[in-house]
Image (cartoon, rainbow, N blue to C red):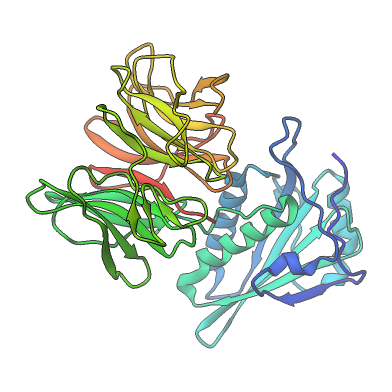
Length: 427
């Protein structure tokens, strides 16, 4: 593939303190790559590691491992084996340019390394990038944080590399909300996108279901059953503070909240006016709404044909049309952020509940998951290249990440017996 130009200033080394944009601000020219193209080839990237003295050696090893995992999951980069080069990049960077060019000439388009030091109670990370297209410059960025934030520093560096080469936000700093069983109750949790650091958000002692994020990631909406489990309400919880309020408590079923892309509408409550609007008028059950990326359409599940199937309609409730026809069970639709697929639960020919993808025009369909499990509740990553879902095997339910092409299956939860209803946050 051709060289990728950072457009950095023509000097041996440029070190910038990381602001909101970090590495993005370190370039005078942006070149984004369309990773959705069928002919896209992953960018060869090499990570030399992070130099640190005692007592930071273990932290440096951890940080490098997190960064490698993030970049691999991004599907943008191909990680290269750098052990054969025997390069140590601490010290004077301008003296390393010749060596870096030699490595780049071997086919590694991007080289990444860093130094770690301590300052009072903080860890300082100086990250450096050499790009085969720039040839004469090294771009750097500095991060600082308390030791518990090391994983976050690695996630941030990964996201900035993804953004620099694709123009898209990375997903390494996103979160996944989910439901976990605690005794006889099911409570709301949130964790990092890679399954790290799960944190309990509710402790109500009864049933909580179906969390959904606000566009700004500030709030989580979810269905809450009262203690007698005879009535459902839609609650809104502020993630940072735990403050909650009831936003829908109408008679009847109040389930599966869905926030519109502009953040104004909660299907079917207009949050600006707090007025509910019934969108479907049918004797059947209509559930699980999912907004299109444009906010002009909704996908939902209905059994109006006798069996659960996925339907589409305009945001005002008009132009209802059936999307899925293959198989006798299709439900729980999730519209991809890129708009090209709707993920949903399907029943396979072997009568297993799996995940399928169907294009919004109904012309393309493929089964995403296989195996002797019950797969449910798909939710898309904001990049449209990954999904999270729940899967039941041997009586235990866990959460898994999978690439949109069916590869890269990875279990995210551990311990316990029941984890379900995942919701991937916006970037």
